[in-house]
Image (cartoon, rainbow, N blue to C red; front, top):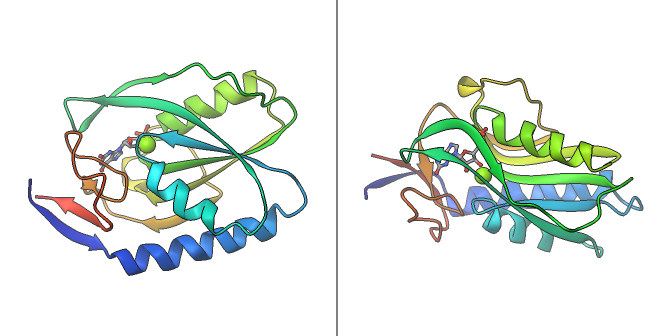
Length: 169
Ligand code: XMP
Ligand code: MG
């Protein structure tokens, strides 16, 4: 697997800290529930939430949408969750917003379960690949249509451990 650096470890760290500061301020005193989307969102989630300076609740949901390694199947599978979302303000934490299917599916699922307001923070946004309209509330970096890995994101199940984000060559 060959991977060429696109966003450095330092750039990610700085941007994640900035996002956390803005989100912490915006949701101060509102007791938000953060929902991290696994697997890709795990590293972003820990770094983001370590920079929120007051206690919050975080829960996890697992979404899978990929077939043939790189092409979206169009179907998104979600694991059933048991945590309570009724009347809560929710912030979904996601690694990449691509076609928009995953976040729309999660949003619909949470709405059905009675969530009050649903916001989202995505580390990467690839607007060129959007199939379904979706407007994230917070974006780390907008990127062109590259297939990327690192910082939680995999290529054929590998590379999630890398501290930077790179393009698969
Ligand atoms: P959708 O298309 O539902 O996709 O917005 C969101 C999910 O697709 C995965 N994804 C990628 N995974 N490299 C990856 O390893 C990529 O470049 C890429 N683009 C999208 C990702 O899991 C994301 O949550
Ligand atoms: Mg993801």
